[in-house]
Image (cartoon, rainbow, N blue to C red; front, top):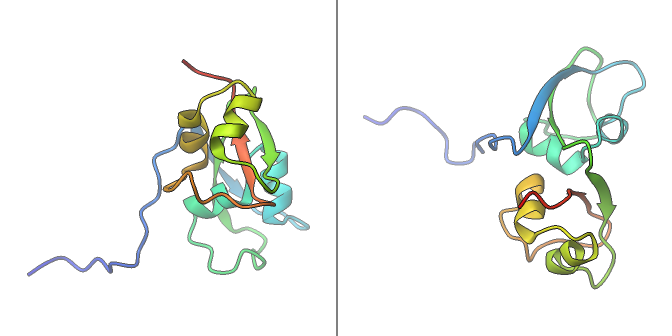
Amino acid sequence: MFPFFPFFMARQPTPAYDTMNYSVKPGDTLYSIAKEFNSTVENILKFNNIPNPNLIHIGMMIIIPLSPPEAIIYTVVPGDTVYSIAQKYRTSVINIVKYNYLSNPNSIFPGQHLVVTASLR
């Protein structure tokens, strides 16, 4: 008999840099938390089982994937590719994929926020 593990349960990614636990405070949104800790809502959602990102509650404990201190948060515009963003910021495609936990680097979209780091070669 196999242990019960539903196929739809996603595993938490391995942190590319570090994580911290955070207790939601009055007035917090996932966007404000991401901004405060130089992360993205998308990355926070990948580390937490939050069914509705618009419904978080005071005292809720969430895991925040941290970014290296030199990282910026970049907003994807039409025509961007991971490669073009890497070229623009003199980093590597591998870093962008790694720090954004991208399973498919070809599936970024306008308006998406990405962590962009300095090259760590």
